[in-house]
Length: 285
Image (tube, rainbow, N blue to C red; front, top):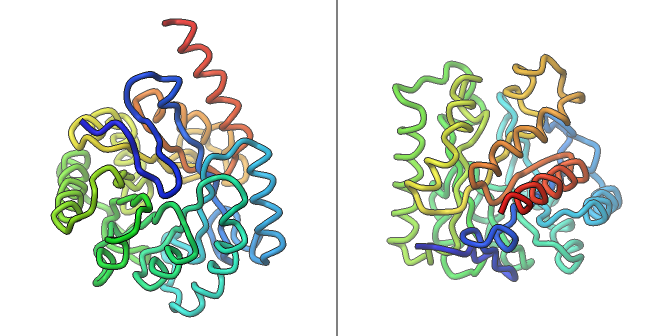
């Protein structure tokens, strides 16, 4: 039974004592002009660092740097342009305190990010690109395997499943087996069901409700990323900029079922909510 997530310079417990295996908050740092929620706000290096520093003050555990938008319909970004966006930020943040993750599916970006010292590779494509596994094999960084049906250009055109939970589990199991067969330590792996990536609102909530099942069947830590997404707006009726409270509620729902990492835009609010939730859980023990 796996009890820790090896995460570059960090080692996160995720089973046993709840105080030690507490949920970790991953703050989103998009250095893109077209992200669905905060595109363009942190493009320059100065503003990106400033935002990272604020997240640290707010209690963030991990900063996830992304240079390419994966919103529905987003066009692919050329390799050199992604490198120009993310590499200065990764080098600037390497020794700032929290763990650093890079959100990319391109093997060359993975290689350069590992040289820069990142602690995690967060791949929406589940390390399926040619050369992706070779790029990460010999590093010690954590690897987040996400499920996505189709690609960002087509994923929300007509998502369809016979049994979304079973099919996502099958996909993630195959990827875990492929990576471990390639010699990657399973303690480096975590999973992401991919809320909003080729799923309807109903699919997303079926997966959220099955968080505990995914963890139990696959025996790996789970990252939940539903911050400000359409699934939140569908329930609350709120536009993107007013989805903070709903996003925090979704994060707590995932953590209550065992999620180890929640990927969020609203770090301070999520950190506070988790502290209160954890205090309440401890009082019941």
